[in-house]
Length: 222
Image (cartoon, rainbow, N blue to C red):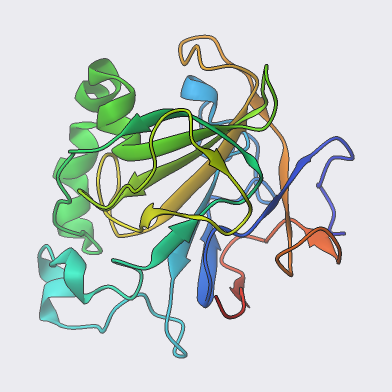
């Protein structure tokens, strides 16, 4: 176990296969996303990358302009249930927007952050699914799913590895990735984020760890 992983962390399986990079990790700072808003205190983001460690090829557009989400390694990658639980919230229909790696395009995007917060969870999380791990929680949120790919309904009982949807670029997202967080309730205005950790190998055994910031790892085969 790595440092800064609390002993009371909710342990999840990784919700994907293949090669990914951790971003905005709570191993770097808490709150991981710079805010406790919407229960994001211990949230973590995962970006799919190739063998070169990049999420998409570099070009003049990546330096100067917006990019199509389809060129990114993670766009369309299957996202699966990271734990056994019941689907308690499903939201789909938010568009996947252009990706932004250029500092030139990130500045105007950040100026719209306050508006997205005012617009609430759909504008922030985009297309998302929430699993209840028990009758009263905790609750696992998987966000920024690809528009039109959510395959579950509220009330569905899922096992680890059941397909939920695809990685997308909906909501408050500058490039295709999946955002994972655990909260104590579904009252987004007051809920408290809970610490999270992951199993390196899908299943109920093996090492648990909290990926470091920018750590690249192999989540294995489907």
